[in-house]
Image (cartoon, rainbow, N blue to C red; front, top):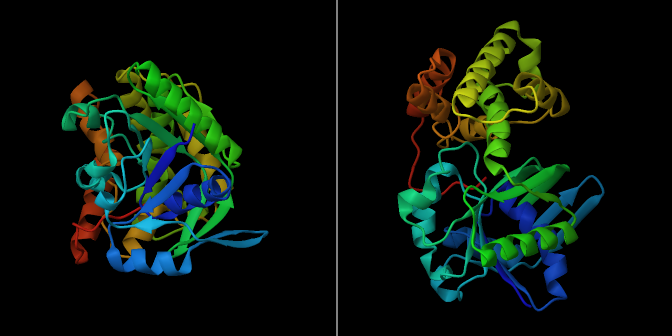
Length: 322
């Protein structure tokens, strides 16, 4: 049965997913769209296509791009690849794409979006995703697939049978596109596992203006990283989150394996864009207050990043894709 998929946001992950899916969709009856709020960039991407690059070379794909959700009929699956602080507004603008049968999949950093069903009174339970794919946006519509990872998909609440079937079908499609994808029965745990890593790495790379690996060469940065992750772990345990892998060791391993990587928060700082600090370390602070766990080290980096953001003038109404 044909399936209609829309990917919202032409950032690194949005361009990566749409690039991998497009070759499979070309020869099928399925349809695939990339949605971008920016009309000028939509025109550019329509003319030039999406450029997918690996260490083996480049491929350019003529992927359909639109900035007008009303011009596209409702989708079976909508994957949101925008920054967490833009998610609510983006969802409202994309209402024409949605029907009661549409499966919504949210792929954001942090955990501040996990209450979106209750907050926006969504008619059906959405799915959530966590991905460790290495993707870097080199320019508009130009994505570098720098490293393979795993993408986990799952529901926070028990879904209807139709939704479960849709997510299983999406998993199959993504796997056929070459992604390593797994269905998770405990996606909250997967999201927290990624949160530990993001909380330890992202703010410090932005504060010190360093790559991931360079955090390990500074005694001060390494010490702060340990304290941030230990606080996050204490909060998670108080929240009842199951922890199967040591959060600090996992974070240090990622620092080493992605030593040359420029984190998304450091990229945001360099481009003078709003960061996701509220969804990452800010969420740890909020959860810590809720469960009675002090989080002074996370509070400190939140304040520092906020001060950095205050120094540059940015239009916060602009959707920033991840």
